Amino acid sequence: MGLVYSTGRRAASFAASFRDTCAFLGEAFGAMAGVAPRPRSFRFRDFALAFQRAAYEGLAITSGIGLLLGIILAFESAAALRTFGAEVYVSDLLTISLFRELGPLVTAIVLAGRSGSAFAAEIGVMKVDEELDALTTMGLPPVRFLVPPRVFAAVLAMPILTVCAELAGLAGGAGVLQIMGVPVPVFWAHVKGTSDLFMVGFGLFKSCIFGFLVGMIGCGAGLSTKQAADGVGVAATSAVVAGIVAIAVADGLLAVVCHVWGV
Image 1 (cartoon, helix red, strand yellow):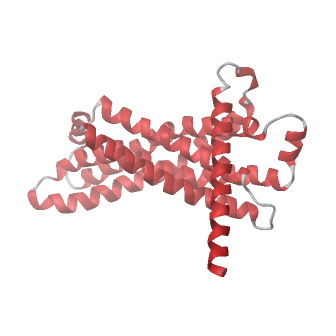
Image 2 (cartoon, one colour):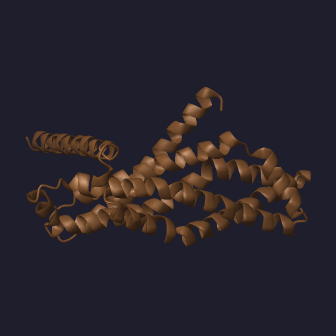
Image 3 (spheres, one colour):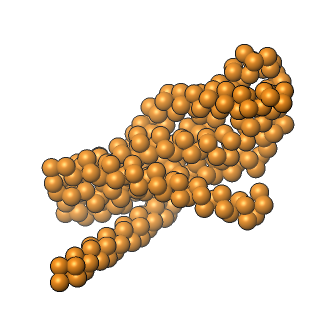
């Protein structure tokens, strides 16, 4: 009987969580779709503040990680290609890996750690302090009031941060190859020859999807914060973990789509 009770309780909890998630997604998509016909209802001040925190304040750490990533990739790949005297092709490897995969992926993980947790903590504190109940009492739906500005800010910030991380990574790789005897003009000539509009555009498209996932998961975790002493901390942690998992899953699905389409 204990096993049956435990199984039933977990099933009921999962069903309730799934119902709440579907309700949040429906209300959030409806709120974001309603911005176009009613732009005056959009809170541009909250959007500007969230964008400043996500993009401007995260620019330094994102560029720094991109620089280190380019240096590490250049050293590791050059060590393997040096056997064949092909160190110059490290630039091609860096270009493809940064533009198609690592640039958007690493930037999204950084955004999930910074902004996703911040969204969850901000909204979670508002729920613990019963500010969300006050918004509901005043006739302001919390989802429509809080979610669209933060999600749009994350979507807009991701391509900017991704481009900065990619450029920083290429700069780090150019510095490493310069030390190994490959001139910088040769490096950039290979970058220009390897990259194309589709590669860059696809990477930016992926970054927008990752930003959307980070924003939605962060806001959803904040709205589901429990009224407990550790509620805000649990919400922030779940936002980061769920965000990184969602990013990895989405990246894998996009890789499968690219393989099926042959691009």
